[in-house]
Each structure stands twice: as C-alpha cells, then as structure tokens.
Amino acid sequence: MNSRHPLSEDIIALLSGTLLVALGVFLLKQAGLLTGGTAGIALLLAHFSGTGFGVWFFLINLPFYALAWLRMGPVFTFKTFVSVSLVSLFSEQLPRLLAVASVSPPFAALMGGLLIGVGMLILFRHQASLGGIGILALYLQGRFGISAGKLQMAVDSLIVLVSFTVVPPWLLLLSVLGAVLLNQVLAFNHKPGRYSAPA
Image (tube, rainbow, N blue to C red; front, side, top):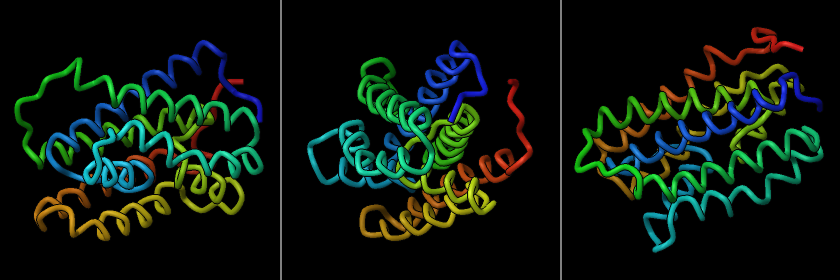
C-alpha cells in the first residue's frame, strides 16, 4: 500500500496524531478513567502493576502486526509500529513534562475522548493506526465497508463495561462517555469514500 501523502506530511501527521492520543490518555489516567481497545487494556494492566501504560501499550500491540502485514501491507504496518511506539514514548514522558494537580473527571472524559479520537483520525488518514482493534476496524472497513468508528465504538464500550470492577460506577459511566465521544469522531469523519487525499 503506497502512501497518498508526501513523506514530510506523514511525519508531521504521525507526530501530531500520536501526541494528541498520548495527551488524551494522560487526561484519562489523571482522572482515574478508562477507555477501550488496546489502550484500555494497557490502562488496566498499568493500574494493577508497577509497569507504566506506555510499556504495556507497546507489548499488547505486538501480536497485531502480523495481521497488519498480511492484510494491510508493509507500509501500513511500519507506520502503525511507529505510531504505537510514539504513543508509548510520549505517554511515558508526558508526566515529566506536564504536571496536573487535579482534573475534573467529566472534563477529562470529554477532552480525553476528543483528543484521542482526533489523533486517531489523523493517523487513519495517513494510512496508520494504533494497532489492535484499529487494525481490524480499518481492514473490515476497507474489505466490507463496515464503519471503522462504529465497530470500534461497540468493542470499546464492551471493554469499558468489563472494567466495572476497577472504577466506581460514576467514573465508569464517564469512561463510557469518553469512549463514545472518541468513536463518534471517527464515525462522523472517517467514512468510506468521504476523504480523498492528494496524490
């Protein structure tokens, strides 16, 4: 799969998209909220262990690169690997660069979901993803026309609901709201045939 963007645009997009995602995850984590997909699993594992989100996020995504290579091609796989690595790196470094004494959980759910959604949208439009469910969602959208946003919303909501033992009910509801907002960004803005990148 060949990129439809110049290399310079891809580099800027991957850097900006992954930084937005890392910032969104940072806000969710600061407020004790969760999310879906591999990021949600990584947040859960970070909660129960002494290992940071970035490390878990990188490790969890490793098995999905085989599907990406077989179904989406080497360019997509490479960009996805770079994107996952950058999110992992930025997530580990953000607490050293940004100190937040407190954050309102409703605000964190709103801004965290929107930031992650916009970051993922940027990556999707540059033929990259954040691995895991994103790879499967993009493959199914390309092959069968299934909306990547709607599929990811269904899976993410299920993952967040399974996490009810970790957070109080009201934080769980906010986590679901954040996941819905995230995926509405994708559902509204990443539909088959809607976006045509320059050749």
